[in-house]
Image (cartoon, rainbow, N blue to C red; front, top):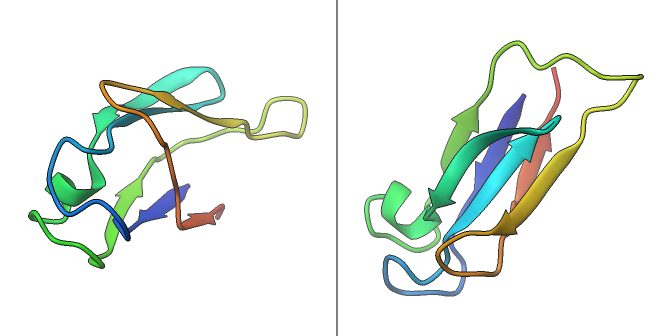
Amino acid sequence: MVLHFAELFFPTANSRQFNVSINGTQVLTNFDIFAAAGNANFTAVVQSFANITPVNGQIVIAFSNGAHDQPMVNGIEIR
């Protein structure tokens, strides 16, 4: 599974931090898109997760507030 991110609004690090879980397992903690992109807006960040197995035919991706709120994702690839 691949998640695509780009910070399109906040111009500083630590403005948007959130958590991501896949099938109940937290895979990103206090993820900061801006910081992950080298402190840049409109810059793609790709996070890959191996060995994601559907449970009852589903893959559940949950976004929750971390140190700051407003989780977001720009694209999801399931391979």
